Length: 115
Image (cartoon, rainbow, N blue to C red; front, side, top):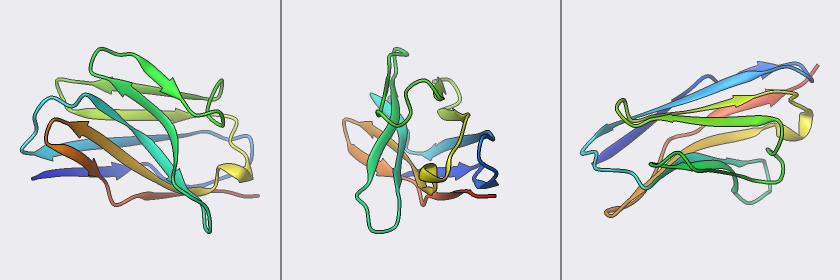
C-alpha cells in the first residue's frame, strides 16, 4: 500500500505564489512518474505537471512558464512551485505517482486564488 500526502495548499492573492509538496510512504517501489493534477468544480481532472525518475518534466498548458516541478527520489517527494497565480488556478490539486504496481493518488489539497 502506498500513501501520498499533500501539503502547502491554501488561499493566495492573484499574482502570488504557493509551493505544494507531496510525500510518499508505505510500500514504495520506484515510481516511474510523480506529479500533480488538478480539478476545479464541474471540470475534469487535468495534468498540471509530472516528472520522471530521471528528472524529465512535462507540463500542462496552464502551467507552462509559471510552475516548476521538482522531485527528490531519495525522499520520495515531489514539489510544485507555483508563481503568477490567477483565479483560474483555483482547484483541488492531487498528487499522483505511478509504478509497476499501479497508479496512486493523494487526498488532494485546495488551492484558492482570490483577492
